[in-house]
Image (cartoon, rainbow, N blue to C red; front, side):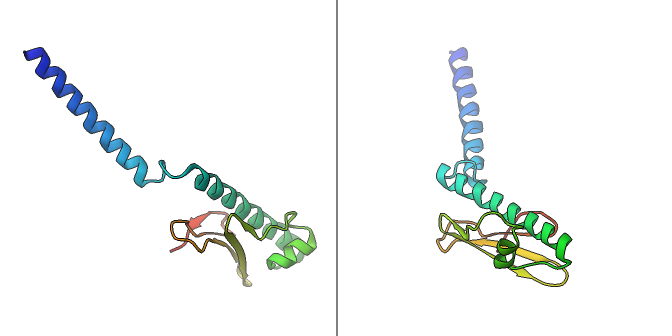
Length: 123
């Protein structure tokens, strides 16, 4: 009888740990839709490419550029302006740039990158 109670207690603890772990994975995005995760990774890579093109353009011209200027100058080799519903835009100033990716549907994170080369979510 004591062995059965110990076994049930161990199973209950194990199930509790598993449940808490599973809940944490779901809330941090680890359990998100695989297609959306692939799209988000692609969008992050596109933002990094835009930021690298901005750096190259700045080195050559001494200023930051719009998406059109980046493409026309050859600094940005891809002409994609969207990926799976995300659209890209670039805002420039004398001090820097901010490239953003936005999706019109709820549940898709808006992302941005600037001259620091750090991708961050937008609020």
